[in-house]
Length: 336
Image (tube, rainbow, N blue to C red; front, side):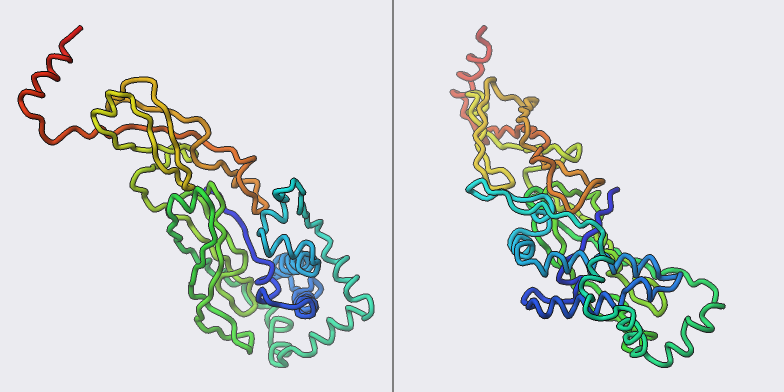
């Protein structure tokens, strides 16, 4: 089972999508100071390092009008993998190089960043600085990590074929202003469903789960649940099986198979044989999109490759045939 880690740049900087450039800069300043690795303790060093890099990555994208425009209009996948417009122009292809410290130093070049860190530390709750982990906390036994939040997200086969954005609402323990006690509050996340996701897909939102004093936030894990389709069924993960209802007359006449695919396209598949209940027609490359969930940078399907589509037939026999017609049909079938 694959786990896909995802996040939203605006949520990383705790901003809405109407944020100005000044809002983006201010958010980066505050959060890069708050989660600077120099403030981390041994127990939360990994968490701070992760947050520091994600904050830097979000700032690089949202502070650049070109990158921000691609992200806002086409999404994270297009930003990373690139997108070609109708005129053949290629946009995107961004790659985060892990230079969070360089970005921080450049942003703070007019101020001593370490004095800013000290200023931030001095604003912390005095009770936390006097009685918190800086003193007696060192002798405490290591507490177990916070429990992850796991949710199921039902998706139709059309949504898994085409991709979509869905919103989930869940409840999590959130730290109060005293940084010690928590309240159960409602939270929302937007989940990007990429073409090709399946019931085996798990999407992990790092540190979006429960909050707790002196602990790393837990993760939010979203598991895809596939809603059964009336006519299509997913087989072998990347293939589709379509059941086509056809009259006995059309079956004997080898009529073309006409139906709407999961993306709305009208399909017209010609048949070169009399159709029987055992007939199965294979259409190459018309199955589910193929996605590599073990090598994702929020990637889309691999070069638009797809599995295959298999068509089987549900032959509809007439409810009633009078005796004369029965005799004629039997006579025809008995002819050699």
